[in-house]
Amino acid sequence: MNNVPLNIGEADWLKEDALVRIMNILNEGDACARIVGGTVRDALLNIYWNRSKKLGDLDIASTASPEDNMNRLEDEGIKVIPTGLKHGTITAVIDKKYFEITTLRKDVETDGRHAVVEYTDDWAEDARRRDFTINALYLDLDGTIHDPLGGFADLKAAKVRFIGDARDRIREDALRILRFFRFSSDIEVGGVDEAGMLACVELKEMIRDLSGERIWQELQKILRSKRVMQVVPVLAAIGILREILPLYDGYDRLLKFVKLEKKLKRKDPLARLSCLLPCDEGKIRDTAKSLKLANKERDALLKYASPYKQHDLTARTLRRVLYKYGKDVVIFNLIASREMDQKTLSYIENYKIPEPPFTGADLIAEGWSAGSEMGAELKRREADWIANDFEVRLH
Image (cartoon, rainbow, N blue to C red; front, side, top):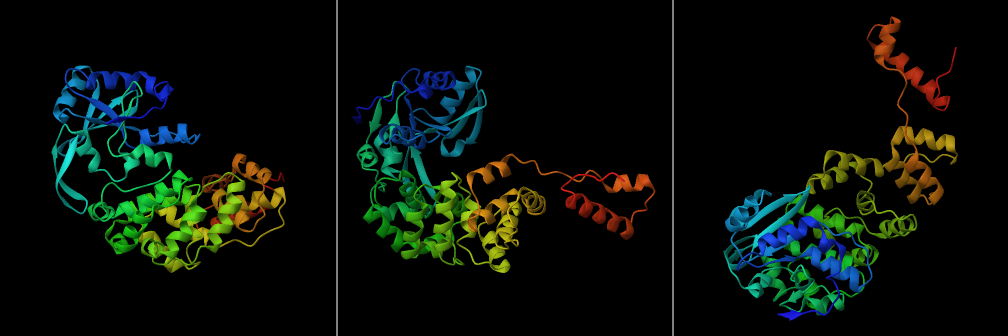
């Protein structure tokens, strides 16, 4: 394996007590454990490309069996969850921090997402079953990087490249099509790998067999990425966006919206998704169902598709629309209509939407009986309260 000459060993996160304790336990005797995957990739990108991406939960690869790792950790009083024991994975928890630990594996047989694997102590074998070379970098606690498949060269070139034959990797899991473009979009600097893109185009219909949850999980990361304005038009041109969003309705609105959103340092994936869909309730509901969106997410899309009538933008009218439509919808509309500035955004974000200072219980205490007349009185008082800029008039 090649040691990459990069000064990562002094990184503060490598010195955190919980990580040091876990790694010391997992490396006792003849066992060997290394940090792997997204944390290593992002840490190196942060250093090499001067980024500030927040590192997520740590994944650790180990030559020891999952049962051996579990016993080692539990003997030291560390909580262990057998999250994927039959796949070689356990999760250790220290100080509310989660460490996923997986025994090195090699594929014996693959069938879509479901592969028959066996444990190995060969780091290169473990690396070959991963998706992209930049995700097959291993890190020792002292900062030594192990690079069995040339991932660091790709990272330096800001290139996302499939491991081995791209078609084979995609046939193992079609979600890798979306991940290919997500990582290409996230890295920001390099161009899209041509061989990888051609394989994605060739096998794009496999996206139809993916679950909505998995598609949305990756799509929202693409929509949040810095290069979303470059990647979405590419996805549209090669037909992949239509596979992801069958009811896709053009990306011009998205480009305009993202340009304005960036000036305000915002990244709202649901708002951006809305810009790709037709303003049609039925089609929005179909898309929400297809992507398995939560009810709250679906309702937000529906509200984004029905813009309220714009008012003269005064503090008073702004408070009214915030009360009626909520912050997310108002922000979306003001950005889309180009009426948003940083001062207005700050006001909205810090504004606490009031709640009516009276309820049905208050009216009953006054002698009202529950029914339509009491309901009408509640609405009258609410309208009067809103008209008085959310203050109760004294009579």
